[in-house]
Image (cartoon, rainbow, N blue to C red; front, side, top):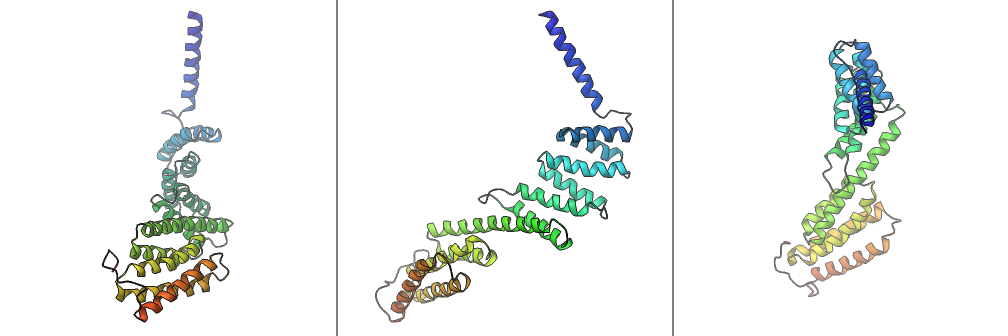
Length: 279
């Protein structure tokens, strides 16, 4: 038992000594420190690599080793999925070396950091908007770069997420019968994200929502709101003439036309509704 314990202790001592030899120590030259950092990076030990490259950047600033260490520091954070730190270090690299030939690659990587940080649509979308901004900036600066199409695809994907969030906010207001707020968010989805799949569905819902809004309004506001339903029907035909929702919107259109005619003729099919939160 004692011999086994001694063997384990000896192994731990040797392992610790070997590990310590691999770490950057006081007195190491810049070249040796950089080589130790690269050894961790090449072994895909990105956490240790980041620590080592951070040390090199501080002791070798203004040298070629310092410049490369700054680049690999950002890369280590990125590959270790520490995307906020990676984005910060990519931006630091650009500020230090704005004319470097790696700048387009680094700017794309920085945009990817925010893409990776973009959460599911229900959560706050600040990082999503940052990613879109950075990808657009990349495409504007480097229109001939090989990553332009990928950046454009990422923008489309992220905008789809924003459209989804906007649409679901509108649906919440529909469910809670807050029709004015619902129409605002449906308009936002349609106008800001017309290329998204949510815009088509939002326009269908907008027609129905204006009918419900009118039904629950005081009588002197009903004609205007049934008219809005009809206007959105016409907009729908222009934007989505081959839509699978065509039959549904035709039914809403017929309903809005009939109710608008009743209101204008002073008919009784729409009773005046007391103020219930919808003016």
